[in-house]
Length: 285
Image 1 (cartoon, helix red, strand yellow):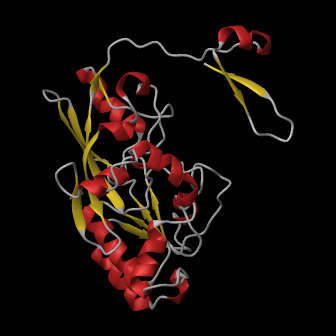
Image 2 (image 1 turned 120 degrees about the vertical axis):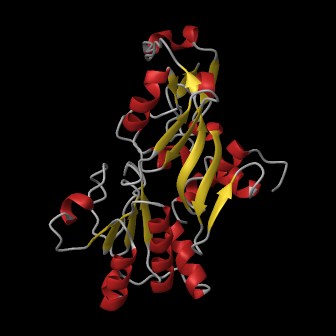
């Protein structure tokens, strides 16, 4: 890992690239060696689908299933897509089998935690959605202020468990956001000014790679991957669980400071000129 680029700089540089590279494309390229073109589930032999369905402990939902229309929906209704299969995984072994199935059948993959991806990465057309919503395990080490969390948890779930101990994880402002995608995407939360981004508080993670292997990413194990997943998005594998720092929180006041446009020259210190068709002066606190 190059030492002359910080993780946050890397994340900023990689934002545009993240929209064109996904775990699904990595799986497909590795399976074929080159081309990013994928097959749809309709092209997969029925026997292979039956074997996959029987192999996982969770639930496999396909078009025609009574639960399909509900299961395929994501928070951002702009992305009204129709996956070929939705695998509601119940544990890491299910995720591994799902990745291996997608790799062997050359399928496009979308991974869903809470389904809030603004770029639509939580769903796909014709491919396999690996839904982590059934993976909601959480263990709290109150003495060391550490939580072991599965990535299907929503922010509301985590808060409900940590609050009685006076502890909190850096979480999103909305309770239905999944902690998996939120944390791997950086994680700008209400506690960030005091405790950093959510990704800054990840101590280790269990990751299923595109080849189906499960590894640990931490400062001492696969440190380059550990560096990349903390803010780099979901392009490196499927993170099934994480160890994260918790922080003491008792009373908290939050809000938004709004200034009238006429006050901006006096209330703010830095003037930024935006490169717009009609240049506009903005003040940044």
